[in-house]
Length: 261
Ligand SMILES: [Zn+2]
Ligand SMILES: [Zn+2]
Image (tube, rainbow, N blue to C red; front, side, top):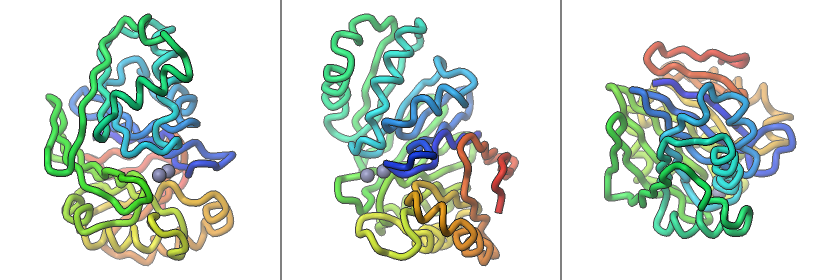
């Protein structure tokens, strides 16, 4: 399973694109979240952008799904023919169609590919041929569904936004890689994770690797070394702060990038 950190930023970071993660396994590619600044980063790092099979939207904040019109319209322009499946919470199809109507009215009529939708629920697993998906509700100001992906004997967990809950803790148990929103160093903003809560979460899940993403822009800039040193204290857990474009190969347990901890 290959993970590419397309974007690692929070909503309004002027230097880092919104957190967006490309997961590839068994010939299937799924993009986790696509906020307003994610599409250009996706087009820059994806090797075969028109081959994307699925898109998962963790929740309906703009930094997690307002990039969809750009992603879809460029795909239409470039003659995409492969079907695309968008997964998200109840009402996902209506939300996306409303967004497309506002951004580029009538553009979907020109699409030469099928656009499919799957509604995700905490109690209902979903699957494609190569990947299995399960979901749990995170603690965030608007409902957010964390996702666990299993494929070819490996598993990853992506939190979306929010603090851990007992449900997400159970969902993440035993995952090879956890990707968790870690907005701040100290718990200053309810409904968001912290560096320490993410580390505790991954440790309790007995995960091997933890990627800290969606760190508040000033916190990441001014406290990078503090974040790194907190991760280094872990003895059983490999903690890292991915940079945009970094790859993580779950099979080989290696991070290819410029910021390994
Ligand atoms: Zn966010
Ligand atoms: Zn959010």
